[in-house]
Length: 289
Length: 289
Image (cartoon, rainbow over all chains, first blue to last red; front, side, top):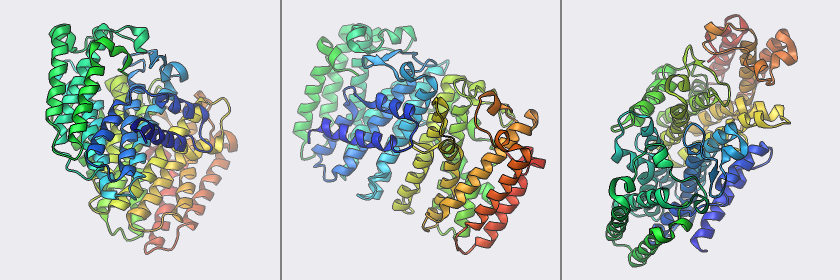
C-alpha cells in the first residue's frame, strides 16, 4: 500500500475507535474535522520513509507510530488555532476546529487526539511491547515538556525567548520523532537518525517562514503574516528571502548527508531532495500544511 | 512507604522530568502548580489500595499507574477550570492555573500533563512491557473518546444530554481506571474490579453533588453552586439531600460487596467504608478536592 494510504487507513481506524458507540456526537465530529482531510502528512510520511529504508519488518508498529505522530500534530494545530494563541479562523482552507465547533469542543478535541495517539501506539504492543514503549517515549519527548512542542509554544509566553530552543521544540521535535520512531519501528538504533530529523525540521521551519512571509493566504488555506503579527522569530526577517532559500537548500543537503547506512539509504536520499524541491518557494503554496 | 508518600514521590519524579534543563520556566511552574500541593489524591490512593489488596508484586508498575492517573486528573481540572468551561478562579484554595499563569499556559499545562501521564507509564515498561501497554489502554479509555472524561465534558455541549453516559464518563471512568489499573499492575484480571470502580465513582459523584449544593465555598477551596449555575445534572436536585445521602451509602455498600476474592479483600472493604464516612456530608468539606 502507498504510504499516504497506509497513514490515512491508520488514522481512520483511530478516529473510528474514538467515534465508537455512545460517543458525544459533536466531539466525535470535531475529531474527524481535525484529522480529515489532512494536510501534507509530512511527518508520518517521513516516519514511514525511514522505516521503509530500514526494511520495515513490522508494519503494525510503523503504521501505529505514523498515525500517532500525525494525531499529535493535528492536536497541536487545533490548540494553536484557538483564540488564546493564534486565533486562526481557518486551517487547510476550512474553518478551524474552534471556528466550526466552538472553544470548549476544540479544547476537548485536542485533548482527545493526544490520548488517541498514545492509545494507538499501545494497541501495537502485541507486535512488540518493548518497541511500543520506546515509541511512546519518543512521541512524549516530541510533544511534552521540557523539549517538545508544548514547550516550544510556551516559549512565546516568556519575556526572554531562547530562539534556538524555541525552534528545536516547536518544529524540530516532531521531525526528530519522525526519523527516530521510523528507525525504532523497524528495529534499528534511533541515535544516528536524530540529525536527519533535526536538519529536516529546520528546513521545514525555514520553508514555513518563507510561506508565512510570501504566500497568498487564500491559496495557503490558513492566515499568513502570523509571525510578524505575533512578533515571532522568522528566518526571512533574519536572512532575507534569498538567504532563507540558501539556508533551506543547505539544510536539505545536510539532512541527506546524515542518513546512516541502511538498505534503502539511496532511495531515501533521493526522496529528501525531491521533497526539498517541493518546499522551494516557487510552488510552496501547494505543499505546506 | 505510606501510599500518599509513594504517590507524591512518583508525581514529583514526573514533574521534575518535565521541568528538566532548558524548559520554558513559566510552563514548568504551571505544571508544578497544577499538581502540588494536591487534593485528596483519591483516585491514585484507590489504585494503590487495590494493587495492595492483590499483593502489589511490582510497585514500579503500580506507582507509575497511580501517578499517571493523578496527572490525567490534574490535567482535566486545569482545562475544566478554563474560561470556556467553568471559568473558575480558584482550585484547592489557590488561584486556578489559568488565573495564575494565563490561558495559553493553562492550555499547554493540561496538554503537557496528559503527555507526562503516558510517558510515566511507558517508563515502567522495563518492569513489564505488556502490563505497561495494558495500563496505557486502561488510562486512555478513562480519559479519551468515546467514553472517558473528555467525552463526559463534551456531553455538556450537546442539546440532548445522555445523563447516564455523562456521569459514567465524567466521574466513573477514572474510578474504574483506578480499580482495574490497580489489578493489572498487580498481575490480576481487571474484569471483576470494574463494578467496584463504577460504584465508587457514582458514590463520589453523589458526594461531590452534595458538596456543590451544601458546602461553604471558602472552606471547599473552589466555587460552589456550579452545577446550578451551569444547569448540570446533580443528585441533590434529583433526590433531595436525604435521598442523596442514602444513595451514597447504598453505593458504598455495593462497591464493598463487589470486591472480588484477593489476599487483602477484608482490609480493602474496611478502607472503603472508612472513606465513605469521610465523604459523608458532616465533614465533607475537608475531604473533597
